[in-house]
Length: 91
Image 1 (cartoon, rainbow, N blue to C red):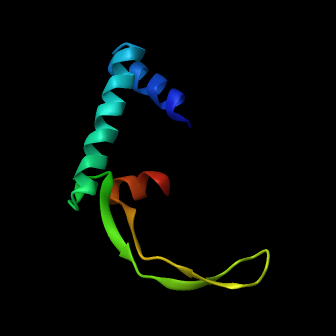
Image 2 (tube, rainbow, N blue to C red):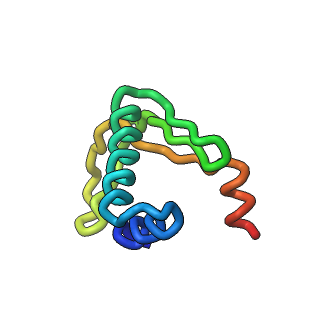
């Protein structure tokens, strides 16, 4: 499912227009992104939680040349599925 299909699904489920559904989805994504940028965790009970984790610097290998390269440390977004989502997916 891509973003347009998700907007269509939101519009059908909520009886909102596609434009309103798109704005609602964009606002949700922006709110989650801003919270993660601040280092906060976003928890949606039953669905899952978004958090930020630190990935340490490490040594890697260029697959084309085989040359060793240094990969910088960075922050990454993580998602952990909630119990209800996991249960739904496994049905």
